[in-house]
Image 1 (cartoon, rainbow, N blue to C red):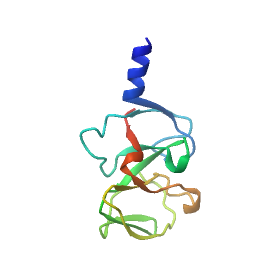
Image 2 (cartoon, rainbow, N blue to C red; image 1 turned 60 degrees about the horizontal axis):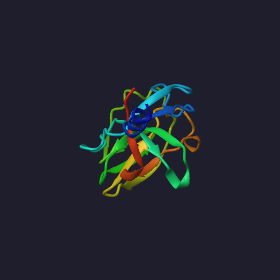
Image 3 (spheres, rainbow, N blue to C red; image 1 turned 45 degrees about the vertical axis):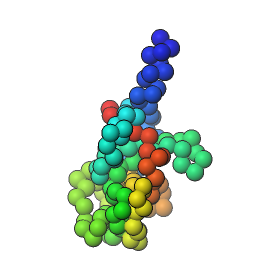
Image 4 (cartoon, rainbow, N blue to C red; image 1 turned 90 degrees about the horizontal axis):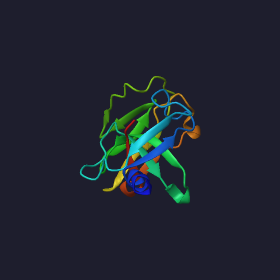
Length: 141
């Protein structure tokens, strides 16, 4: 039984969603499963929902969507995400506030992650650059 428990912890992480930053895709209080092995043989892709762990000494994990990949330029204008100068389609975003984020170029090991709830005020939303090493896995269930 202990071996099964240890093996499961190596394969998956059980996460309770806290907060509204990923609504409507993920709701506050939901329990989700994160696949730790999802990125062993491939890199995170735009549109993936990932679990971010241990940022800046915090033990909390965040669930966010990947919107830009290493080496790409990123900006938000009037609430719309632009990657490499093109506005990306985000059918999962239902409400948009008029967010603005200046253009940045991601490093060779950086991803831009953001929640789906863009109706929130930008200062109430945690998002930004994440180094690959902090991406724990991909949302599974």
